[in-house]
Image (cartoon, rainbow, N blue to C red):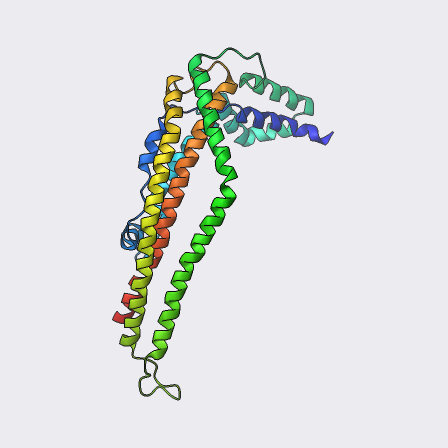
Length: 310
C-alpha cells in the first residue's frame, strides 16, 4: 500500500490549513500605504527612474511597491502559519535534514502514529464545537457579506475583462494612428543631397521635429488615460474601504479572533483578512501598472531627446 507513506504529510497539510487565525493588525491602515497612480507620464518616469553606473537608465515601478508587497506577503504568511504556533514549529521541523532522514527510516505505522500525535498536539483532531460569543458570531456574519460581494465580483469577471480588453484595443488604436501619421509625415520630407541612388534621407532635424510632435501626441493620450485611471482607482479605493470597514471593526471586537472558542472559527475569521489583503493587492497592481506603462512612454521621449544631441 504505497499510498500510506503520503498519509502523514496529508495530515500535516490539513492541520496547517485549519490552523489559520487572524493577525492582531488593523489592516485597514494599509489601504493608505498604497502609492496612488501617477498624474502624468513625467511624474511616473521621475519616480520609476533607476540610475545604474555604466548602464542606460531604467524605469522600474517595482522599486516603488516592493516594500509594501513584501510586508503584505509576510502578514499573509503569519495568517496561514501563525508565528510560534505548533504549525510553525512543525514546518521548521519538517525542513530539518535530520528529521527527514529519520522519516525515511521509520515504518509506515510509526509515521502514522507520529502524524496522529502531531495533529493532536496542533489541535487538528476534530472535537465538539463550543458555543461562540456574540462578537464572533457578528464577525462571521460580516465575513458572509464579504463572501457574497466576492461571489458577485466573480460573476461579473468575464464582462469586466471584455470591457477592459475593448478599452485597451481602443487605446492602442489611438497610438497606432499617431504612428501612421508620423510615418506619413516623414515620407513627405525631402531627401538630402547625396547618399547614393536613394538620396541622403530626410534632414535629421526635420525628422526629429516630426517625431517629437508625434511623441507629444502619444504623451497627451497617456496623460488623459492616467486621469481616467486616477478616477477609477480612487473609486475602487473608497469602495474597498467601505466594504471592509464593518468587518475590521467587528474583528477588532473579537480581539482579532482571541475570543473565538473553536479553531474552525478562528480560521473562518482569518478569511476576511485574506480577502482584505487581496483587495489591497489589487490596488497595488493597478497603480504599479499605471506607473510602469506611463514611465515607459516617457522614457521614449527621453531617448528621442538624447538622439538629437548625439
